[in-house]
Image 1 (cartoon, rainbow, N blue to C red):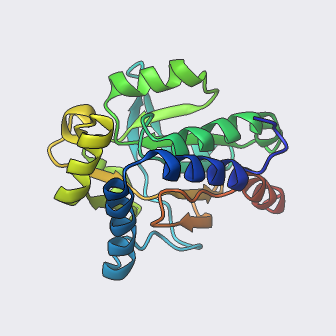
Image 2 (image 1 turned 180 degrees about the horizontal axis):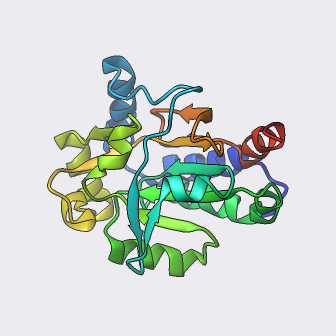
Image 3 (image 1 turned 30 degrees about the vertical axis):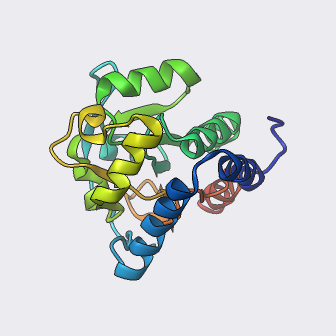
Length: 219
């Protein structure tokens, strides 16, 4: 897609196409999963001004990446996504890829975290040729620390299995089926959260241009 097309418009295009193709039961269950998260207030996220929880996770090659070491080099955009199977997540990562030169000009970098197993993260990275860290958060410990993880209800797990052939526990090599809601944080060199975007709606994402605006203001 054209680089100038806002991520929001790209996401809406996928939403409309999905509505045309997916069975109504699938659409209803996905909508219910979002409303349940909102009504039960299952995810709150961390707020601006909070200290970002430190973590060490492995990338697809087994390399360990530690947040505190990375923020010492410059600001970090930390984004949590569901996995390479999610078209909305893929659009988000591709949108950030197009802006990586601008992000690097701010002495910043992007770290993308998902509950995918390392093998599946490697597939995602190779498939999309992403120029940033893609880390595996096995059993969602880090996304839980950032208050963006939730245990997938049985009806949603069955919907994903039926519609996509996706067994989350097996795919993520996890003990429990868990996913993060869309969430992006900007963390400054002192490890303080300067932007917090958390949304229970799986079709929603932070515009990369908004993240870049915040990076500009950190100077």
